[in-house]
Amino acid sequence: MPVIHPLSDQLINQIAAGEVVERPAAALKELLENSLDAQATHIEVTLTGGGCKRLQVSDDGTGMEREDLPQAVARHATSKIVAPSDLDAIATLGFRGEALASMAAVSRFSLVSRARGAAHAWRLDVEGGTVGAVEPAALASGTTITLDDLYFNTPARRKFLRTEATEWAHCEETFRRIALAYPDVAFLLRHNGREIHRWPGATREERVQQALGEAFAQGARFLDTAAADLRLTGYVVSPAAGIAPPKDAAYFFVNGRFVRDRVVLHALREAFRDVLHGGRQPSYALWLTLDARSVDVNVHPQKTEVRFRDSQAIHRFIRQSVERALALPVGSQVAMSRAASSATGNVQHSNLEARRSYITEAPEHAANAPRTSACYQPTQAAFSLPVREAATPEGLGPSPFYGKLFGAKSSAVTENATSSSALSAVAEDVSTGVPPLGFAIAQLHGIYILAQNHAGLVLIDMHAAHERIVYERMKETAASRPLPSQQLLMPVSMAATTLEMATAEAHAETLATLGFELNAMGPATLAIRCLPAMLQDADAERLARAVLRDLHDCGSTQEIEVRRNELLATMACHGAVRAHRLLTIPEMNALLRDMEHTERGGQCNHGRPTWYQFTLESLDALFMRGK
Image (cartoon, rainbow, N blue to C red; front, side, top):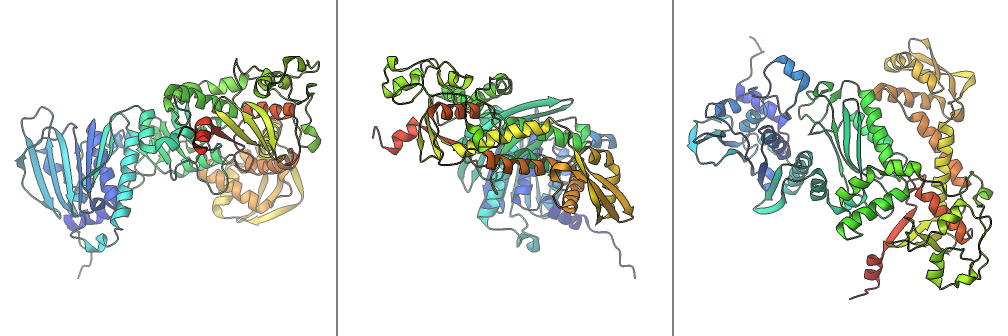
């Protein structure tokens, strides 16, 4: 008796629903993508019970003719692809033609649509996979799809759904992702009869503020880079002083599609590695645009993963673009905030459009800015600066700023014959412009520097700030020299998998440029004969495995640079000015000027903040002034 038999269409659709319609949020994603493919400009979403009881999506898109409705709920029927060649360059969000059929198989499904220019609208009801007749209906334009009682006929699946609050949270997150990807489309979200979000069509900057809030916007840095047919635009949140990025604000879009791709995630982790503290996660909203033929989106049932034709080039492009944005000096950060504040009239609330106009010019400005202090070396004595305090009773230096602040007599200020560029920077008149981090006014317990700038009070951790300055100088020096290798007196043998053996052979040239020499000693053994000289004391086997893993996953590795930077960070920490050392006012100001022109100056080598801005508004609120 035969045991193999074909499955019924209803059972096939229910099985597919387990992949495509994992939960209400997955159904919402498919319906929103269909609306966008139909060129909708206004989309309304209505949910009840977290989407489990009712999920309705209405749009003003192109709609469907009467004959299209039965085909819309048929399996593998679509208007988006025709020939096999269309799969090589998929330009629509949906393309498989199984989403509506899967939803209709596990819910009480209703489809109402009116094609543009058509005289009437039409309705089709499907209950548990049983398709009804097409009937006339009332609808002004577009399409409305309603799912009632999701998984009512598959209790085994329904029991895996979470609480209403959990399913609602997933639906809201899906709504936010789609809205971020298409800011020019108006979106409305209701839940249990209450309006939650109403976002009119807007620019990308405005949609980011709508969807991610002011906390994200306050710390966001705009980036816009292009290379060949690649373009990356969007915002990355620098973990700078006083900014707490929102939790889980990590959005990456490829050609308008939200994805969680391992190549992309690895590139972003590498870009943020030098500025994040502890277990904090990076925050960003980025849009990658490339030729549709260069990416395969048909590799995951829910289309959340993609495969790039040249993953190594994509990885390098994303990492370098984000690194450049995060490396903006402190002076650029503060000036950026100032430009945004002047546009909004509020220091606390930053406008992303103002940030865009500044950031695009910031790298060139930072590169051409004069360095205003002596060169630091990683030793304690090296913090001495070639400046002398002016011969005033207060020892405040020749700047009119201090005369205005402390009421010093102009006759008491003497000229310093050996004034350096750092002292010249200190001498900038407050009436003509205050530097971004302001002027030092005091030192607190030998640990913190207090400075006054245009916005209010700046508090600086002098050890953390100097640590970053020294670290960046050492990195520049190390990067300008070829990476030497050290031959091991006794080669280290390691048991290698077939994949590691193949990777070592395929990337032998790359390994050599990194200071490695790996030779096959057998079908499953590698000999490590050379290591990078700076890391000769590292665990050779562990280091080699990490490098081989990165080379296989991404086609490149930052492992050597990471290990080298860890060593440099330790050296910089020991070489930076220690806490409880008393500094003169000129020394403090020289440190501030250096911070303003040092990349990643907002964080120390361990990712902790180096400075914090207290605005006059926040200080007034603290002391209840005006209340």
